[in-house]
Image (tube, rainbow, N blue to C red):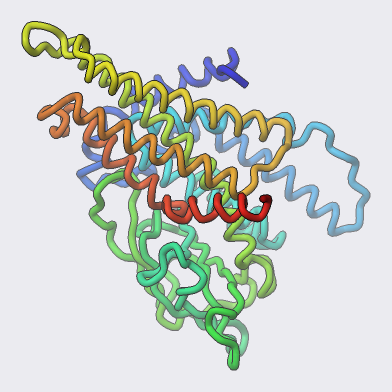
Length: 408
């Protein structure tokens, strides 16, 4: 794939129009005023029929699983997922990230991470009970793994526990930096099983599906962050939260553990490159316009070679990240899975490129670049989180190097 096809360009134009009309006028409220993003996101979902598509796919999958459970022979579905265009799913990510990347984060964590975890690993009953409202964004989801003392070492330093009791489990712990945490209706809570005689680092990782309002569950107010203000982030506190066994994701203590969480990481890293592409595109557009119209020493600053060098490097970064995204789309279309190392490499480069491009954009704007009204400072602050969440740059480098050494 070397360029968007006609259908993709049409969708791109429609999404861009929605963003300009429905999101851009509210950016200050979303980024700095504490406005929850969910009404705007639900309007987006309904405008493009994503809720109806999600419902149709949900009904189809549930029908298949019910038939399988009844022992029915299922014909091969030759169309299936191969008919889905992965490019169309990434275009909204790119276009929204040009202005308010936090909206993508809030929507993706709810629909793809939380809803997707339940649909991929949940029992049939759990899917029927919790998944569909998350997939349509009628309810808000959160995926809770990070803790105050665990960042990159999410499993090794995990302190949250599940202790078996009569009829279920008692959950205790503290999760932080949880996207949608303050407003989540449904939470996938990842913790360690309290196993006597087993060292904490070797204990099973288990996951539970929680509902807001459960006794002992506290959801904090949103944090004040450096960037992506449109994505509410908070803390969760669990104090002897009792859950019955039907909330154990997958229906067993091996249903959704380390492997399920790691698969989610790979999916998340591929999407981050699309976020980076949107940020880079917008930063370059704004910089080009400013370079052509801002005059110093009697001429547009774009006539100065040092400014031209910055613009040229921005374009190189944009082209490289776009090519990575296109390669991912091509692989997905052909059903070729991306390895963890490949996903890590894509995220590693794209995140650094977004940070470098937006930093140079601020530099091109000079003092104006430091002011909110010119927007490049927001793009720079939004870009920084790409080097942190979904696995830090340092962890991506480790993943890439380990894979290379194994193959050498």
